[in-house]
Image 1: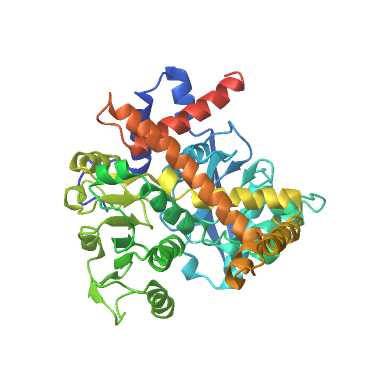
Image 2: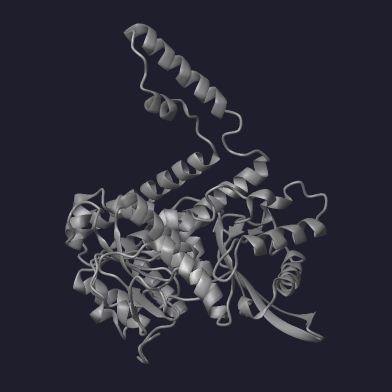
Length: 476
């Protein structure tokens, strides 16, 4: 991962280093900066579950980084590499991410040291429920205090188990479903949540391409159509980002990197076909419509317009940063570029769309789901038909005034009222546009005096300032 470089900072050190880089450009007291930097608390739990005739002991974590806003929010990941440092770094990123996109949550993160593939579904349910029990009884899962979501190795099913476990332990809590987001629709979820992070990546890239100055800074031509993209990781985020960019923006996905290497096709890979193959065969090695490269890390260095690391942290590091050959890196994963690599890439003129912005679609739509659960009504239910009736009246009036019939295809599009999915996508698009506008404004304004200013530092400054303002308002 680090290319064998002993000077490579850890994930947590990278986050702190990038935080410090931003704070140096701000007027914050040393004490307030330190308060924002450190995690408020981290709970470690070790619990046993009787499985396969013996007791198996598991270790899990839940870290709360900042309670300047509550509840705190952040996913739970299942992976063997989970550790306290990683969880605290991810919790910090959640704080900054929520502040950047103006979602009223503090930052939190959870993790369980487990490989979910090692266990049958019923075993995984018992493990998940016991982990949830340990957190719930300490209010580390609670609709008004701490609200988890899916992350690496978890999904809708795990969230449904956690929500049910919370309800069993809090039978009179009318807002029980709001204790976790990323649930299935039939368990209180929201349309558009599964693909939300990938959709947010697409919206972020689209917004970048709306600004000629930003394209000029990256040395890119106008228009997304035909742009060559390399994606690392075909999980939920990488798959949906690639699918939407390919199908809706006519981008060319020339390579996809997975755990068993990479598959390359200069003419473009069909993401839907590739995803189906990976689901059936467990990897990309035998995919027939492209060339297999065993060394997936090498393909990160392939020439492309946009590189989307969408899996693990620290995949772009001191060991390979100088060989990265792209104009724009979009951090769909958390922390895929180390602090050391970030400096090398900036000097090369590579534009980096930071993780706290690029993958904020998930927490944004999680916020919508949380609000839906608290309001106990789906979005669009009360106003959709009224909107349609009003649009129908306008069309009828126009037809009477002009003596001509409205074209049927336009009529259907115009009359259709906004349903939940339409509203979720609209809210996500608005969030990504607004946050990007704030970042780029600070970026370009500061460049006049500070040639080292970039999108990531601008994002940190905006986030840290909002957290600082919240603390000051609380009397700190």
